[in-house]
Length: 390
Image 1: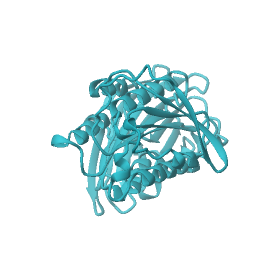
Image 2: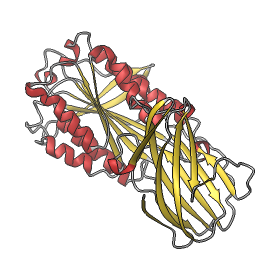
Image 3: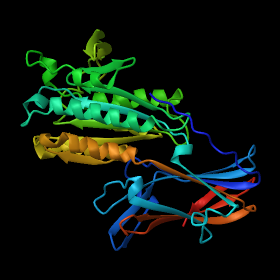
């Protein structure tokens, strides 16, 4: 976890503060997306939900918060360097005249946002039987995604944190205890062919357990701010074949692994009988959770049931599903981490009378693609509120 401090200028009195943040972390609903084409191709903009509009009595300002992600034609999120963002109010740009004293603009370096990152990794024996072997590359790619998040959040402003936790599964569930270093992930024990349970897959139980754990963390204030998000990444190579068997009464086992000469503790535990519907219900119960599902390999059971299950889990979590052969696990994680490492924020503070206004977010690709935009109405002033999309 890393926290850094950045000074934030004091807002003027009787102004409108417009906060625009990039960070949908997944597929936005059709109601919140729009796209356009330009000389460089098509891009799309997805919002993660309704803008948050409220009156700040201390600063005598109205704040409008919008979270979004912009994607190129391939669906890959655009990095900050790949896009140009503009904001318009009633058709007039608030970004193009930095000398205008009525406009004050800030970016993501000034605004705190936290992430809770939960990894759910398949540690069944079949992961070691993939061609090429997938268990080791999965651990390394998972470790690298954590390092990438920690590195990015190291320079975020005060109040920003990157929380992470790893759960893995076979016929049992396992979860880290306390603080780990990222290299502990690469020390997760390889499944043993002599152990019956380690050849099984308790996917639904792992997803349900992790979703409930992350919801509990959220309820207790972990990454629970208006700009914060919880992200779960689920990786599996097969079909659940053990969640129907209750194991909640097994004895908890506390174990230790070592990385960089540092011990890291974890627990082996069981779970009650469950199924796909209960796992999806637990995912959907978390208001700020996005779930991305990654499929590795080629054998996902009759009628590709394993693939269908992962797609349904991702859909319930408003996230993305990706599938690659075991030789491309690192690429899968790269696509997922890009969903949150491209986060940006824009804040425009605009001197403005009370009343109703139209706000338009416009995104163009640096290569000339787009524009894509999203427009909505809001009321500024002491009765500030979001009035609906256009």
